[in-house]
Length: 233
Image 1 (cartoon, one colour):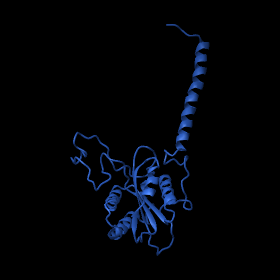
Image 2: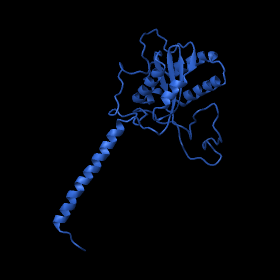
Image 3: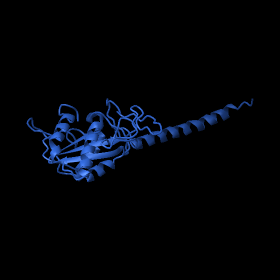
Image 4: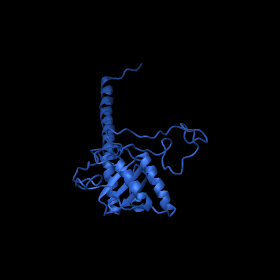
């Protein structure tokens, strides 16, 4: 076996070290750049976490006697929904506006990372493989009910609680909604599967020219239960 002189070995080492340093530096630089991009929704280094004074979502109006969900009417804002769906990581969105608030239901996809908050319970969707003619392998269903936008398998991602969404993403969503609907007082955001599917049912009624006047009371009960003031929204 040919034995290389020490000076050749050393030269190879000197060439190798700067090469590896260049790779590491490039990788770190690329990661830092990703952190600052719109595709990293949960990095505290890439985006400033909104504080109590600057945040645009959740409970913002003070007062012990204030009823945050005292909505008198409801309507869907497609312009606001379209603005929200331009945010990476969001597959679909509904935005309901009332006389005081905006309520946003979202489903998530893999076009961005970091949309789940620290300590969140995780995605409550299992995208397991399916066989021909079977949509849901756990329940044997061959199709998704038209009343549901998302299911618990082979679907977009959902999160159980509003607090499971990162503050960075909620801030982006709230700002997008307020740009389209500047009069709203508070913006509440959820990726809960049942909540999104409820909005889907209401949207279908609207699309078929049915009045939503009779739905306001039940909607108020829904959002009062889902967006609790005692929890981190």
